[in-house]
Amino acid sequence: MRLRTTVAAALGALALVITLPTSASAATGDFSYRFTGLDGTPQSATLQDPQSPGCVVLPEVADPGSSEPAFAPHNDTDVWVMVFTEPNCTGDSWTLRPHGNPATDRLKLRSVFLTDRH
Image 1: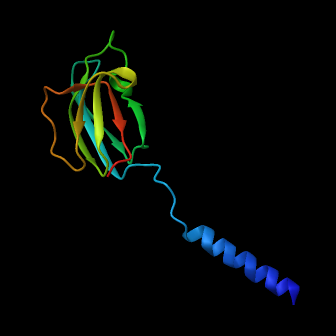
Image 2: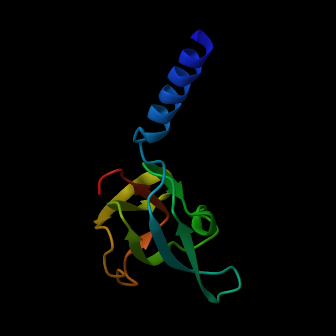
């Protein structure tokens, strides 16, 4: 009888753990941007379901000494995003709302901070 009660309690506890809400570890959706490749051709990149909250340095434009900044960011995620002109989420910044329209080519960026705000 005790074994049945113990097993039932353990299964009940497991069911509760499985149904508890967990904190979000990734934004849902895509964050995309354009950049000029090393060969001078226009290219685009997309971060799919990026980690949030946190800072993401865009690898194609991370080194200000060897690349132009990325441009025309489009936040199609479900969280607010701040774009920065310098790596490591430094420099001038602008905020992009969730599921917004693509920004202009004049908006330059090298890093992105994804918030946990929906």
